[in-house]
Length: 625
Image 1 (cartoon, one colour):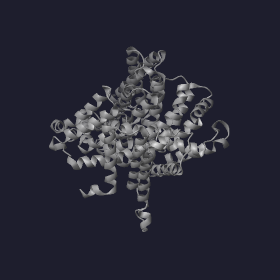
Image 2 (spheres, helix red, strand yellow; image 1 turned 45 degrees about the vertical axis):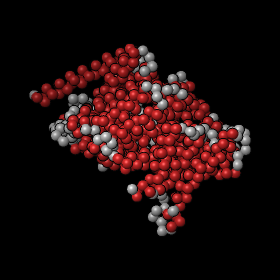
Image 3 (tube, one colour; image 1 turned 60 degrees about the vertical axis):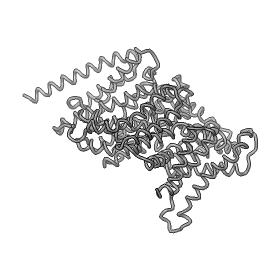
Image 4 (cartoon, helix red, strand yellow; image 1 turned 90 degrees about the vertical axis):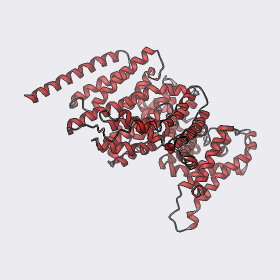
C-alpha cells in the first residue's frame, strides 16, 4: 500500500472522493465546486508532468511541487473568501489585491498545464485570444472592439461563470468526471476487454472479421472514453495487429481503427463528453441530443462496415486468400458469460438516463453497482487495491478533459465579452458572398482548423461558440447546427497535418504517420458527407414524420454505398476511374436527400450498377475465351 502514499495517488484519490461527496451530498455552490475541481486538476497535472526531473539542480527538480502547492492554494483561497466574493456586486464592486493575484496565477497555471497536457496549438490559441481582449481597440476592420479593462478581465476569467471556471468546466464537474470514473472502473474490472471480446464474437467470423470487430469494439469503447486517441490506444493494440495478420495493409488497418475510435465521440448514449456540453449549450434535455445523434452515428458506422467489407473483397481477389481466420480470434461463449455481469451497471446507466434521472446520479449509482458486481465474482474481482487504482486512473483521465475545458473557457470568455461570435458570423457571410453552400463549407473548414490538435470537447466548445451561430443565422435548426460542428470537430482528429487519432493508430500499425493521416481522412469522407446530409435534411436527426425519417435513412445508406465504391474503386471487381465518378454523382444526389434528387439518384445508381455488372460479366467471359 506504500505506492498510494505518494503525491500523485493522494491527489487522485482526494479529487475522486471530493467528486463522490458532491454526488452524494452536494453542499457546494456551482462556482466553488468548479474552482476546487480545477485546483485538483492543476495540481495533478504538475505532479504528473514534471519538467525538471533530469536536472542536476535540486531546486529545478522540485519546482513543480511549488506549482502543485499554488494550484491547491487557489482552491483554498476561493473557499475561504467565497462568502465575500459571492456577496459583492459582480463587475461593480472592487477587488482585493489577492483577488487579482490568484486570478492571474490560475490563468498562468491553466496555460502551462495546457502546454504540458494538450500541446502548444491550443495554448497558443488561448494566448492569442487573451492578447486580442486587450488590443481590440487597435485592430482594424470587423475585428475591432472596445477592449476589456484589467478589472473586467479578472472578473470574467476567474470570478464569473463565463471564463476559466465557466460552463465547460462546470459540465466536467457535474457529469463528465463520473463517466470517466465509470470507464476507469470498467477497465480495472476487465470490462474493456469484455467489450472487445463481444465484438469479436459478433463480427469475428464475418469476412474481414477483425476489422469489423474493431469497428464494433471501438464504437462501444469510444462513447465511454471521451478521447479518440485514448480509444485508439486501448482497442487498437488488440485490433490493429489482428487486421494486419489477416491481410489488411498497415495503413488501412490504422485508418479504420482511427475512424472507428473517432466515431465513438458521436455514438450515443454517452458520446464522449460532447453530448453533455451540447445539451447545456442548447438548453435542452440530454436525451434529446442522444436521440438526435442515433441515426447519423449508425450511418457513420454503416459506412465503415461497407468500407471494410469491400476492402476485404478487394484483398481476397488480389491475394487469393480469405480475410477470415476463425481458429484463434473468437473467444468462447463461456469466457464471455463469466464476465457478462459487468454489463449490468452499463444497462443501469442507460436505463436511468432515459428514465429522466440526473446524469450525475445515474453515473454515480452505476459506479457503485459496478464496484459491487465486479467484486462478487473471482474473474473480475478488483478489491480495495483495484478501487483505489480506478480512483487514480479516473482522476488522471479527467485532467485530459478538465484542462482543455478550462482553456476553452478562456476563449469563451473573450468571445462573449468582445462580441467576436457575431463578428465571425458576419465574416463567414462576407467571405461566402451570401451563398449558403459556400457558408456551410467555410464553417466545416473552420471547425477542422479550430479542432486541429485539440480534444473533441474543447474543439466542439470553440466551434459551437464561434461557428454554430453562423449556421443558425442561415436558418438551420440549433440542434442541427451544433451537431454539424460537432461532427467536423471530431473529423479534425483524423485531418492532417495534426491528425492525432490517425497518428496514434499509425504508431501501433507501424505505418507512415503522414500517409496514414491522409488515407484516414480520405476514408472518412462518407462521415463528413453524413454531416452535410443531416444539416440539409433534419429528418436524419428525428425531426419530421416517420415516413420522412425512414426514406431519408434508406437513401442515405444507398448514397454511402455508392460513395464507398467510388472511394475504394471496387465492387466484385475493379471499378475504373471514369466509372468511379459515375458512382460518385448518384451518391451525392442520394445523400443530399432532396425529393427529386433522391429519385434521380436512385435511377442513376441502378443504371451505373447494371452497367458495371454487365461490364464485369463481359470481362469475365472474354477471359474465359
